[in-house]
Image 1 (tube, rainbow, N blue to C red):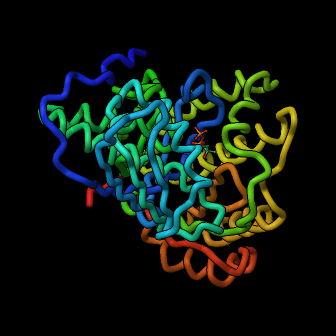
Image 2: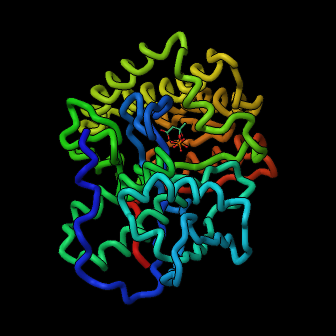
Length: 360
Ligand code: DP6
């Protein structure tokens, strides 16, 4: 995979703006990315729904440095408060992207950011946060290189986001994104996410995702450590093959609106992700007892009502409840009456599939 196309052409225009703002959403994988190599190259392709309500809003302000040094000059402000603790992660991100956006050395940055979801929700903000920041940086580059095509802008923004957060490269557009080269998905790439290019049945329009906040505690294992445990994992090779196969299988499911197939595949992917954690060395469990109670209740409800509601999980205890828009009233009643008691402080977030990032 060539990355040379992301080294910039000489800039033709001076930067005259002083700031840029983007909002970028979170996403939830249907086929999971778990395992990476090199610098943020996935071991298998993944596909996700872009979310609508869970998002990060970022304003990037910049000023030319009088004497650029070796270190980057940046300050992170979260909800109006300076957060030096977040800065090392952005320094590391800048180190990874400098070869592609060399101007970052020449500016002093202030990154003002806020999330639509609560900090203590256990919802990761890295995908939305790093994709929003990547888009702001790309907007600076576009100003200096105005003949950049929209296609290049999108690919490179996703490429840059990936270097900060793997799953973040799937947040830029919607409603469905694919990341990782796959023979059945035209244009797919290991180094950036692409909009899912095929027909999607109308049953998936405005598909609902309610995030049940089961545990807001610190995760015992960061996602980077988790991904790395796929090296030398006894089941890694077959898991990666399975993800490739599942991506082929989801194409007709999405096209035909085959909700039974969707439910079976999505739940199996979620459980497989956690099975990889259960069987790694060292092993770990991110689900909580209430995660399992919720799964059990969803299965019971589906059996009894025939409503095609299903769950998926990310690398944590929270449960994403997925269902068609037409079943919204019934399922939201079920969530309120039967599932909210398993959530910490009865908290959950209604979300639905969205169309990606927006420049403000
Ligand atoms: C379980 O994108 O958070 O949510 O690349 O280290 O930033 P890094 O990891 P991250 O991993 C997400 C893993 C997942 C599955 C998925 O979103 O596909």
